Length: 110
Length: 113
Image (cartoon, rainbow over all chains, first blue to last red; front, side, top):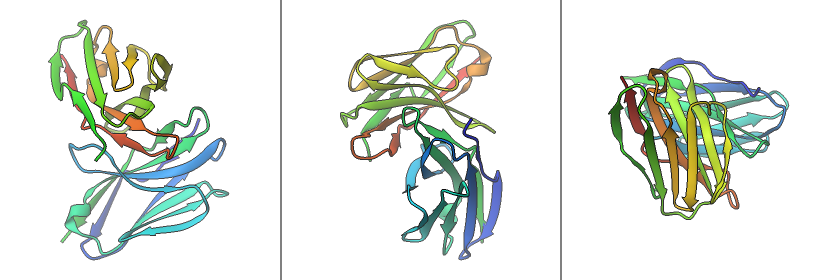
């Protein structure tokens, strides 16, 4: 299968930096998505990495290493509103389906 | 935001009854997906559609069927609801001609008693 693994919970302090890691099976892999999901709401798109390296988008950056089956989401200058679940999802070549990890619940504390 | 709506948004039903959830989009996207989200499991694909009348199974399709008679509507039916189908159901759409990004609807919270 295409197991997507990420930590269940993380806690960080307002204003700090946090890195959320994700590992995945490399067979059939095409790309890696990160979504943000606030409690009771729909997931919203954050980033999509196809090539190795770091992609920066404001306070959020996402990194991919295809050879290692590894990605991370980096959140800088944390704000209270960043408290949410962060979903890692791999795009695989069987019909272009997304396989999601169980999500990382991030709590930002004052 | 992508134009996706789901109905109903909340439903309570009894074991053994059929239930149909509707996803409606105004984006004319070819691909539509149904997921369920449960604690500890994340989002899991139930069924998806790659065009009108073209559908395929996802990883948790048992007990569910789908239909797509128009581009804008994708229906999910629980043929005989069970308590294990209590979940939050999300519809998503994608225009894979330009991007693999999926846009999600607001979700339907279904409780089977």
